[in-house]
Length: 101
Image (cartoon, rainbow, N blue to C red; front, side):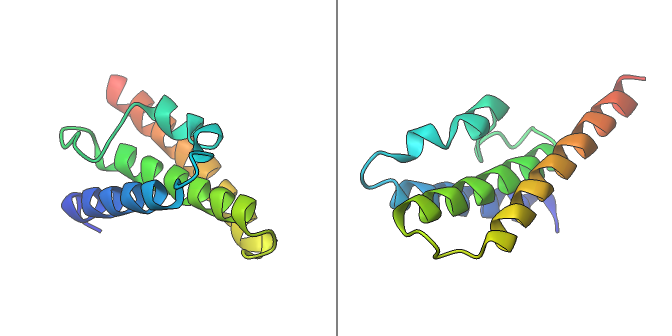
C-alpha cells in the first residue's frame, strides 16, 4: 500500500472512531492512539508511523464496539488486532533504530 493510501485509511479510521464515540466513552480507549502523537494530517511522518496508527486505531475501534455490544466481535479478531499492534510497534522501533545508525 502506498503512503498516501495509508494516510487516507488513517483518516477514514479516525472518522469511524468519531462516529462510534457518540456517547463520549471512547476517551478511555484512545490513550494509546493519542500517545503516538500522529494524525492523518501529519503527511511528513513515515509510512511505518501511519501503519502503526492504523493498527492502533483498528484495535481501538474493535474495543469500542465490544464495549457497546458485547460479543459483536469474535475474540480471535480482537486478539489478532492486539498482536498486529505489538508487532508493528516492534517493527517501528527497529526501523527507527536502523535510521539512527
